[in-house]
Length: 488
Length: 95
Image (cartoon, rainbow over all chains, first blue to last red; front, top):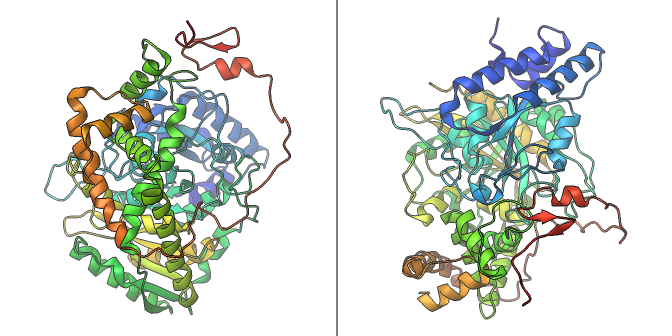
């Protein structure tokens, strides 16, 4: 019998319906795997009681021939989603002990679809980071290791716990959030599929806010089909989020088999910077060949403002963060450090509660929004953002999808790049432009480096066209034949 | 763009984050490094470009300006470090 933890969501769904095993057995198998893999530090909170209780409810519904699209499927939830009655930390000291009295819309939808929450996943503090090393709860380890080197690698970030737990078969799927690449880059580093849908597809309500005009939730899974199943359950209009789209949610799974025949695939010439690993350049060419063999036409395109995207992001995102994170004041929830006055209490609480990277971004954000600098930095960045968006609009006149590498390198060692913020920011050089434009993007594991580490390719499509995104991803997945189990 | 210690102190005050005097120089260095790197945006011509102020091209949803929820003081206060009698406690602000 196949081990329960190595099934895909699609396969487990069939087997649960056929009663080959119960949702409780499935949950127990995953909880045991989580216990064995504690060393990865993928979870901040394990919710075994909640998991068993929900699995039993799922079994009752399955027994009665009922159940939702994810009935009995064990999932991990990034600890940025508020979960009713369950500690929610955003991996920050400042949210010590915070137990939300409400459930985020996305996690509620996943619950309504019958999924079973196994725990809350580790991340970079407030989702600010690309290596999962800024968490107050310690770094997450990548389940993959380079051949012949016993060095612990980062899982990417900020959704590092999500990526590591899916790759290590501790959960069947996980929620992630992506502000500048936080779903796609860790998916590439851990050899899994990560999808950032169009901005507005998933409600942001109840997700701890980082940069509100960029934040978007999405699924992280081991296969493209599983991502399609999970995204459908997560999506949909929510009156509690004013930017949530009042559009029908397509059956993404139905699009998977449609192939790419006749599609035009854009290859942006600006995505070959000096720092791009030669192995990724080769893999990118291979990806183009795969799509060509499947009947698509590659077209060279230009996205002229690509180079400006990262510095633009590091104005817009910190500006929004400095505003969003003003709420952590030691008054309503979380940590409080006593002070001589109200202001002193605020300043001491925030100095002790936020980590170095979060403090740095709040201060950059405060500066670019301050009197005298607003026009030079923030307004300028918003204008450049419009140009980046226009680049994509123009490109999608000529092509139906764009193919790029997801990140410039494979996973690196824990501790590397941690002294140089800008070297760390460069991880997101290929993912940030799509975030700025609000278009959907996905990372698909497409190959291994010479020393055996996962490499990902990124697919981008027009706003609201996740169906084409999934079609292209499926063809890449079929061609790549990526090994599902990390070499652990 | 090199920030001096006084500017960092001002930003820290605006952001309500205590930065000890001994750290001002190091923080100034880090922030200046990031701002220097951001300066490259000056090269981008944004003449007559309208700013993009959000992530979506759709019209934002409106709702009726009405009370839809309430009477949950206990829940609202449940996470407060110093909550009592339906109030949030803070250090004394009026002498």
